[in-house]
Image 1 (spheres, helix red, strand yellow):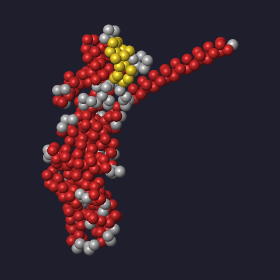
Image 2 (cartoon, one colour):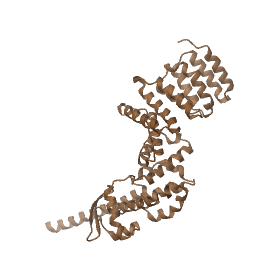
Image 3 (cartoon, rainbow, N blue to C red):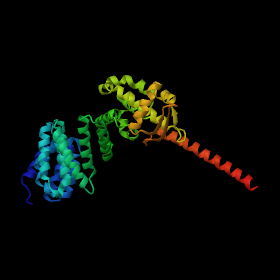
Image 4 (cartoon, rainbow, N blue to C red):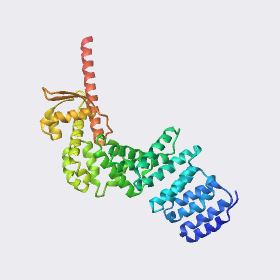
Length: 381
């Protein structure tokens, strides 16, 4: 490969325009480029683009320098650098076109992983432009590729899951948003996310958990550090509301209800939220009981859920239909006999309650063993 005579001139020009903290990088780029040390050059460029102050210089660096030796580097790294440059373009349409060209370059069987990353990031800008039809098509295409990979770089999974979550957010599909957003967070180091992004993601996850008509277990979210981004903010009440739902605490729910005025989507769904908190109160009532003490009178359920006794049977039927509990309803005696409750991720208070029940069970076993031992001595005496 011949050394492009324009490259040193370009790097010199960029160096003069760059802040002092970045200028030495251009010296390194020229040295490594002339020596054709492509791996070391790739690492140097990656370090450069990781600096926040490099933003205004990334697009030109990509177009006039990186593109000259792009075939010499890992194509996945090339896409990563291209994506970083695209994020510096304020016009979403131009950013999408920028990435479309890169996507076409890596649309080969041998670079399919890079293609999926480039495609998803291109789709991200399409989604910002409101192109939902193309977004769904691209998600379906990349999902098939991901299913066929033996292994996947976490950043590729993260990109796919992030775009999927954002798509389902726009579609108001709360359950799918909740699932994809949590999986996305599992693929990234949340310390790398900005404070604004963490707070936004925590806010959206909280709302989707509350509004998702198939989400009745918040434990995984409650234990996730992303929720800490709400602490000390005006949205901290959302975190407290999640804990109230998870424990079925209707009193706390009512105390927090005035905050719903800050979030129209909660205010407009308050009837569904009240039914949901009652269902979670019912499951918590069952969960707190020992397995041999799960015949629960309607009156007890009415007391726990704050519902009139005549509405308890409807609530129980709803819980049975959703698969939250399994059991039978004795309409004559007005009793629910539960033999199974949906498994759940427990918060610390619920784990403590389970510990107390295990201790009580252990004590009963010991007492039974001592009684049998005493009776055995009498038999053989």
